[in-house]
Image (cartoon, rainbow, N blue to C red; front, side, top):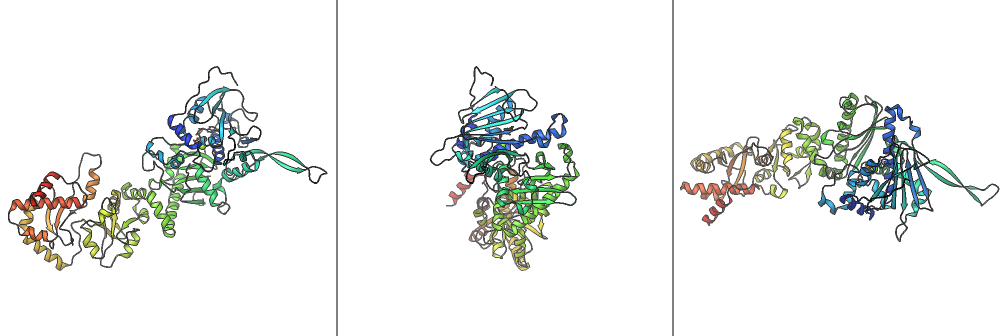
Length: 633
Ligand code: ADP
Ligand code: MG
């Protein structure tokens, strides 16, 4: 090691420090996963160099040349992990190991989420720092491939780290990385010495890292009977490869346990939760590929933001060529994690070429079908699970119905769930349609900000009284989705607030029309008082207990108006509203007995504002409204 005159200890960034502290104080009950994390980093580093060697002859290395070596030293209590991968320069050591936020893809931004520690670490991926769960000091020697100087990074945890120059760091390789963990001392309930036992490490590699495509080697001691003796043994040490090196996705499905699938997912995609569901595909036909597709248990914290990047890992014949291939997943299935490995893709393919690659398009189509049928299967066979899935990712499916001019609606409509008046449960559109009584022609829905508010809407009364089911739309995208679909199984969607809700018999309609005519002048006076707010005032048969409600003519409902106008655009839209009155209500009797037009106008404003309030809409002039009430009282 070169002499260092002045060695400055650099502090971890504030956020990193906090996380590191949480990590060390062991949020993870499974300390053992440090090994899979470090091996996986070593494998990534080898992958990078191996990939380069395939396209650049000057690298001069073949697949067989690569290795990961584990060494255990009981006297010094160290575990050493060496790889001959791409290595790190001084800058890279600083950047990659000095900032937790650099690990994985997460930007540390949601301070207030700090409460849920497990969640945060999960989001970060445990990564390199998991070493501190078992080690009191971590030393990383590294030399980047193609450079002359090796460096040494050292840290004892939260206080910071140092980086210095160093000479050759390994007998095994000139380039790559060697990580030395000095294990913590055993304490009452914590046993770290177990990680110095061959059998323990052998077990952990088999369990978590078996599929790593490069050999993970270790010198293992075996007892051998001494020659000529019956009870005396010699220790024989042999270098062994601990992992089978067959990628999990290439193995036979019936050789893989659920636990293996789950471990693989957690390690690869940095999730502290087991996936909700997975699908292992071996596809042969127009395109040949293997794929592992996972549905996470929960939406990543940044899922519904621009930051989230969709995509599957893409391998060509076992070699990773792209970390996140977005073209493999449609946006509405962007929550799917996983990988695809195909022999049909060329290794040298660039990102731009991939976009136009016919094989890739075929694979994407086939994967989309697989996801759809997997979701359909879950919906049919495991409703509880599906509802959990929909709770996490249903929004994305609904957006999918609205996207690309509604061209995916036919594929996605079967996957939708909505709350409904039927036992207050989530229902599918198929279930709704199957339950429709014969005389019901349309699929009814009501929108609002919460189930409670929707259920209190006056407009739902008549529909429910008819024995018809109503879908309850609690998020704005619901209504936009059905507007895009227009109909489902030839039944059109209809808002219960539509002014032309056709629930009456011909006779009833006639009677209502006559009554409307009788009160023509009254309604005209009222409409004048509400100029610019409502198109007309009319009697309605849809109300049972409430005196008034607002309905809308045409496509735009009041809910949609609210949503659209909340968007940051200049142009505002306005629904064409009708103020409907309940002819059976005492308020209407009072109203029709009035002849002073000034009083009628005041009543009109009162009733209009009342209707707005019931829709959970703001009233325009609260001061005027309350003085009108006082006047009346
Ligand atoms: P992640 O693997 O999710 O990126 P880690 O915390 O595990 O996060 O590792 C941080 C970074 O440090 C890696 O992305 C990589 O750039 C670098 N790194 C870690 N271990 C090695 C290694 N053995 N060889 C080369 N680079 C490494
Ligand atoms: Mg890692």
